[in-house]
Amino acid sequence: MTLTTVRESAALLHDWAIRQALPLWATAGFDAATGRFRETLTHAGKPVLDTPARLIVQARQIFSYALAARRGWHADAAAVVDSAYAAMVRDYYRPDGRPGWVYSVHGDGRIGDGRRDLYSHAFALLAIASYVGATGRREALSLADETLAFLDREMHAQSSGGYVEALPSSNAPRRQNPHMHLFEALLSLWVNSREARYLGRAGEMFGLFTSRFFRSDPGVLGEYFDEGLQPAPEEKGAIVEPGHHSEWVWLLRWFERETGRSVQPYVDALYVHAARHGYDETGLMVDELLIDGTHRLPSHRTWPMTEALKANVAEAAAGRPGAAAKAAEVAILLHRRFLAAGHPGGWMDRLDAKGRPAAENMPASTLYHVLCAVDELDRFAKAA
Image (tube, rainbow, N blue to C red):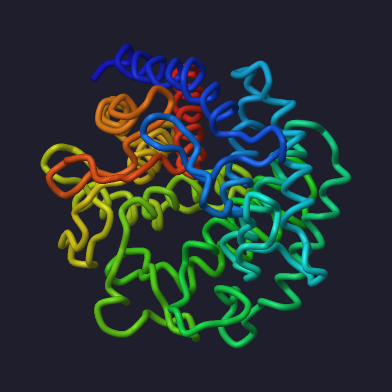
């Protein structure tokens, strides 16, 4: 593929985002009366009203519209961010009088699930960083610091490093995924504040990745772990996700740019494993593998394709041969198989192993993945 194809694929996604996605999710996907984003829409673009709204949806949508505000992609983006951020703090931060953020609330504002969930806290931090970047209101950083202090005080796992999955605790395996998003949030806090403490903490997450989550012998990223952050027993410990391999490639390259620390051995291993084993014969990324490359869950979701796009853009910028062409190929497949297949501005979020539609609705949480990929490809195409 030529540079023209890269630019054409970037323009295709850019046009979809501005003309369709951002208008849809700021209207049908946003409840102006409460200031909260809808959890999900039907395939006809109508809100699903009987589902509690999760904190991660509010945080991811704030990220999305903060990005749109910074890039000038949507006229009302700044107003949406202001309203949604105020509602997120009002409804999710300590509504029961206890420290931390609750997991979900009902439409009338009642707490739906009062868990303190690490994954959700990571996204609350990303929303705060995005809000500061879009508005310049640095006083919001105090809330980020309170959130990090809560994680350190209440959820830090002293014996193994990292953080527990949730409070109250359960017997569920520990995961790399929420730590990955905490890494992302800390990098975003650094970029939007230039406060060195956030970059220092991102370095701690990088250390956790290198010492616990990355398995150097097979050269893969584990997904599930026991309480000591050793690989989970039996098959659970052998599961890897090519979408997360790709997401870490993009994050590691970001960390490298900010710190000057080399990440090449990790990037090479993750990128090559995902490229060799992570796609089916049609070019779609599969949901789960085993370490040996076996397709454990051969269905397809939207988000791994967006992460494959971001990884290939990052690697193209780093000079990896063929990565730009792969980015354009993935972008075109993402649009044709997932975005254009849904309601205008929405998506068919899941395909089964044979590529047939398999999603009941359009989850709002997907927009964060897609817009970030659109932004990465758009900036790369313009710079190239």
